[in-house]
Amino acid sequence: MKFQKTKYLYISTILAFMLIPLGGLTTDIYIPSLPAMAEDLSVPVEKVQISLLLFMVSSGFSQLFIGSTLDSFGRYRINIFALITFSLASFIIALVPEIYVIYLMRIIQGITVSLIIVGKRAFFVDLYKGEKLKHYTSLFSIVWATAPIVAPFIGGYLQVLFGWKSNFYLLGILTIIILIFELRFTGESLQNFQVFKRKEIVAVYKKMLGTPDFYLGLIIIGLSYSLLVVYGMVSPFIIEKVYGFSPVVTGYSSLASGIALMSGGITSKLMIKKGLFTKINTAIILQLLIVFAMLTVTLKYDGFLFLLGFTLSLHLLSGFIFNNVYAYSLQRFTTNAGIASGLTGGGVYVVSSVAGYGLINLFEIKDIQTFALVNFIIVGTLFVTILLFRKASMHQRLEASSQVS
Image (tube, rainbow, N blue to C red; front, side):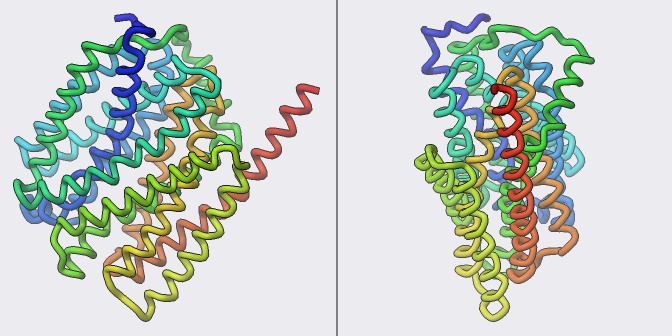
């Protein structure tokens, strides 16, 4: 079905924004349920955490490669197929509560989510240009941050009232509702289909991934998000097992974390006319100061409020850095919007899952002090990467200006 640009553009834009946070929603809604899932399934907590990792890795790697498919075969039919498959996988997880079935369904969910959100990000590049496009891309991370705000908050109450399976029933039902609206109001947004030629597509990937400011930007947004990944994976066990609070408190803490992330994105949006490196340099220096204070203070003081206070500060600045560099990366290669969208979104999940899960397993985070050390490692790596990113971006600008002259 061809997209009716003037007739349903407003509704289709809203639907696109509703689907962009689907990846975060699918990850974060059952974070408060992780300890209960481990107990109910009679498996170690590490095995339940793997379900998060499998989703993130499958979604991340899928996004890296599906952009060319979307640029060649369109967005609409692929999106409809992905929504149906995602919904079925959600119901299967709830109906067949066996850990290896959950693993398989989480991989399927990761792949289908990548098809959905890459297509929806490319939707904006298909139909908007200039300042309007810049305005919408700067909103992406703000909208995306609604998932860490809403999902664990809802998930905490669902866990207490109905148990962990209700999270996946909800995901399945919500996806069906959106599917109905998609069938009624949307269509194919891609105007110029790219011929699917393997050599040409490989050349595009090589060009993008061989561009230093682009791939360093992917590392930056991935490391920024890894701070949330680490907190999401370990906070339920610290809050519920070490400090003795309920899953609802875990949900509220993740709600606060998501609000901090979104606040950073909104602040970035308000400062859109300020220089990119003036903004992110200031933010990373503040992060270094905060994480150093966290390391120092938690050696003497321990408690839930210290955990939350330092975490919220770090996540606010992560949202600020993420929003700036995410918008930069999405607009770096506009002629191949699907591939650029896929690499950008995939980079977030691949880098954050590898860095986050790797550090969790390396340090076995069981207390606030170890958590502070892991945050320090991430922020320190982020600082070095931003320095390299600035150098690469300045070099690219000099090359571009010399070619024009």
